[in-house]
Image (cartoon, rainbow, N blue to C red; front, side, top):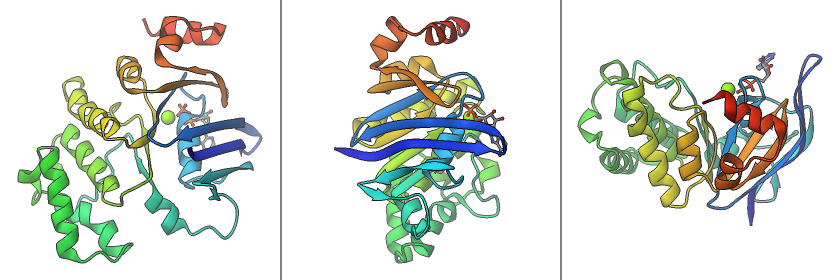
Length: 242
Ligand code: ADP
Ligand code: MG
């Protein structure tokens, strides 16, 4: 069953069409990696799904419910669809624990004790329980990004959007973040991620979507896209990475 449906979506910035009549369905438990050249629209697409940007036309649905257009409960939407960005975006004046507890206590009205237990369980799982009282500037970039993922998971999202979450990290910190994503994939989390970690995309994704000029130019299983890409643009893009 499709949990997220992006249905003929177009997005303009002024006269620039950044997403062009793009349709994409994400099945429950599916991990889809968006790849493509810089500027092809990966971030814009993810931001539209979370309503950080408004689409110009088309429709996006989650579990069959329209989440674009007027009358949508944005709190509910952002609870159902988590997003993690390239920059860690933790609140600098809050400890790790406070960062992770903020949304569930404020938005869901979760009792503080319950939020704390839940946060500590997640932090434990990612090996950062001992950092719970620290401020973000005491953590490495990789640790901060892992906390940002925990913060998103605290809302029990149905879908997690990840936008180049390792691209601001020193190379030696990339794998500790990707390990968490791999773990989430194994636990059945539905994810739509933009990445330029092709080895990782190949390993973790069920489907690769190559975007070109705001369109899905080619999509398929990783073995097909990386092993035997059909489109000329896909071939050229993958060649350019070597
Ligand atoms: P990607 O994430 O694939 O690199 P983006 O979605 O960031 O691509 O950008 C797609 C296109 O939209 C680019 O041409 C970019 O310059 C443009 N763009 C992105 N955000 C804005 C904005 N806020 N205003 C105008 N143009 C934008
Ligand atoms: Mg981007």
